[in-house]
Image 1: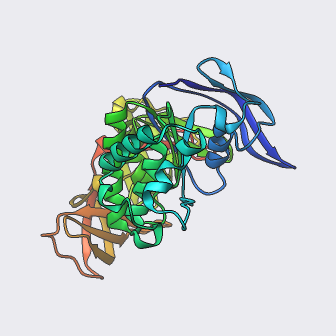
Image 2: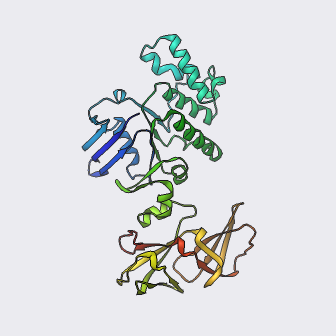
Image 3: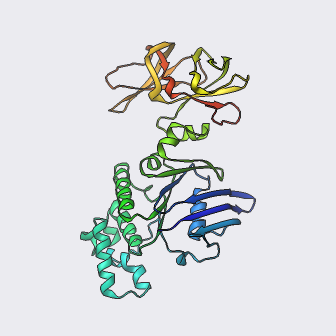
Length: 356
């Protein structure tokens, strides 16, 4: 295992700053996921850890050793990328064994390690096949086996599941989590998929414009996002946002917006300072059939285990509620609605920072 530390890490491409002075410590054996939209700097950060990119300034440390100038092959890292880069003219056995052959490992040891890795990734029956004869999921397992066989202390993975179909992605998430549990190695994983981050990570790093927005466990990120960007990035459907103002005193605050007047719990630790605010509320905390507010249904989306109900209420954007599939609504229906106060998130109207 290995501990990795990034100190004031900066990467510039000409006038463009891809990574803007981030500081991050990645613990031994941690499954850490860097997540964010395209262009946020997550892949560039991973490439600087791997040695594929040289930092403009700052340090990459592995076990307290600065490795900025150390070649990628000498950092003891295993890498799996979206482009699996399997050799098409070699069979699966030869692809997995390639790195060991380059290092001139004895043949009997190569065979044993390949067979062990293939068994661990459930591809023992594929060893004589060519990559073109493998499905997408099988090829992904081959690439993982090729990395496992070198016994790296750290696995670096950049969008490795993005080319797979939806069901296979879900299956591979489970396998990657199980692999991490078995190997107890450090995993650093890059994705733009918030579902992957939520289901696999021990800790999530949310990035935007080269900066770290929030670091925390999946439930912390989902339940108490540090700002409006993080709140909107996590969750399907996206969190409802309502622009408004605060009225009243600290222990008797009221959120006011178009056609809405919503009391806020005293424990929210908010103050009425006259500033504009954004009330965030997830769909599961919008309560249809409760409260004194009224809206008109515009569309419904059945999901099987629940139904999403979109409705207009007079605000700038419609709201969405997640309800039981047993509740039937049609476009044009009038509904009464309220909110579960335990699900309130209040953000500064200018900066987007969390206030409660």
